[in-house]
Image (cartoon, rainbow, N blue to C red; front, side, top):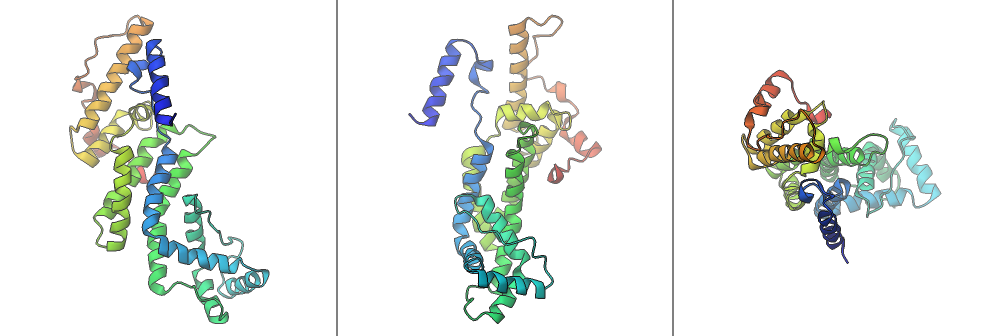
Length: 288
């Protein structure tokens, strides 16, 4: 029995016992880090040649103690910090690939120096190839930071979902319109996978952001207005979900003094909107 079928069976059983809020509307939450991994792995397929070239460089240096010492000499001669060390990636873990590219870029001058001093070292990237690796690394940094944020264990992560997804959706949109054909191809490939899993933001994780006092519903409005323009269907869907959850809790727990007549279409509750929020308080999502 596959995972999706198990989820459906569990959901149906819980529905029968009336254990689910809003008839299971908020039951299924995908693993954000896993989806992000799938998205980036699709992009890495397009840049295998550049990644493989760096991988061969790192493998060569780490291939023997003599080569390591020779590379260390090159690092010293180029006044770089040898303590940073080269990282060899594990192909099944894309974040290790990012660290490998990042470390190789730092030691770029040392690799070029090694090419001059070691006739057996023939895989050093050209100036154009280094430029391509630099673009790739800069592009992947946003996804690497998001993965680290999603994978945290000493702080809540559900409230980080919206701002992080928003950041790399903007990054993908930017690359899809890039004048650089290479980066445009990568961005477009990844955007297809992004839309497959995240064409709509998850309702439960959107609600988690609303309850974070640093964001509230106005941040949700800001994001949807930025991406889709005012009054989008996705924004209405989240607003309605909030009212549905509130009304169900009022009915279930017979909360005295609470109004159970909140209308799902009541737009006046958030009358200030994202435009006022954008004017009065800048959402610097790139530093969230």
